[in-house]
Image (cartoon, rainbow, N blue to C red; front, side, top):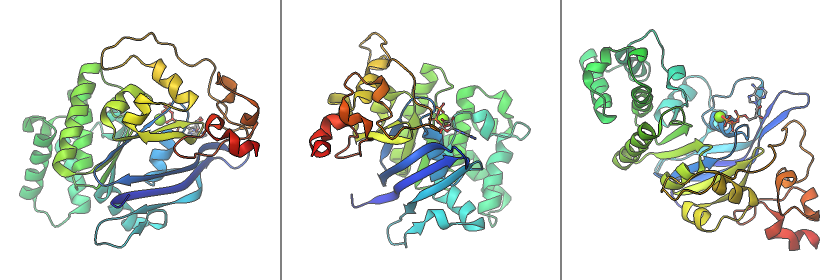
Length: 324
Ligand SMILES: Nc1ncnc2c1ncn2[C@@H]1O[C@H](COP(=O)(O)OP(=O)(O)OP(=O)(O)O)[C@@H](O)[C@H]1O
Ligand SMILES: [Mg+2]
């Protein structure tokens, strides 16, 4: 891909030193400028840990134990994201990569008005802006996310859940980042509000051209909004491809199970079948395919964990290579 804005290679994150929980294992992806990459997987598979690692927001006991992250803008030197520190890191986090979290209530300060929270972003990152200019930028941001300017004086608890999430999206947009990482941004919202916010994100993306890493356990939702998809299981990407490919021709048995697990947003009501069993304990991975205990197709090669080859990490597709 020629126009890559973010390149993640072999990223690995552990929690703790002894019996570490291997939350993210050798995850690699290239994010193209302006595209939406969806990351799907069950609770506990490492999605948020990956989001925090990419935005450099990991805190102990999380430890980044391997890999690299490179950010690139046309005409500028590539940035080694993992080597950033201090002011450079803070500036990078708002100007180049912003993050929207699942719970807007957690990312907004309950005792500060919307105006103050938005204005603080400018005070920190664009200190030369005058008061009037800041007010104008705050108003413009609320316009962008479809909230009445009068709400600048509101406190978070005075807003609905959907509006609060719009405010966090406005904050993320404040410095026009190239990439926005969204971790379950609509999960806490009801379906109608969820749909409105997804449309909003799509509209803003067309307007500003930022790329999105969109994380959710809801694969059917991702299929609608993502250009490309990665399915995550036990800390690794087990299938990657375009949304079309994955919808039409899912390869990994886990992806197939996930697709059967969710009612389609398109309306065809399939029974919720789910996937039997539970995800593995990430502190006790055996070296085999972590999905094998739940897999209807498990066979002898699955005692070795398969590599991600041609977009799928499954011996059903690589068994010849392994048997040799
Ligand atoms: N502070 C921590 N200490 C130890 N283990 C942790 C910590 N935070 C997360 N983990 C473990 O890391 C793994 C990945 O967690 P993570 O929150 O990234 O998953 P997730 O895919 O975002 O799940 P969810 O869908 O529930 O948000 C889990 O097995 C979890 O138990
Ligand atoms: Mg999470």
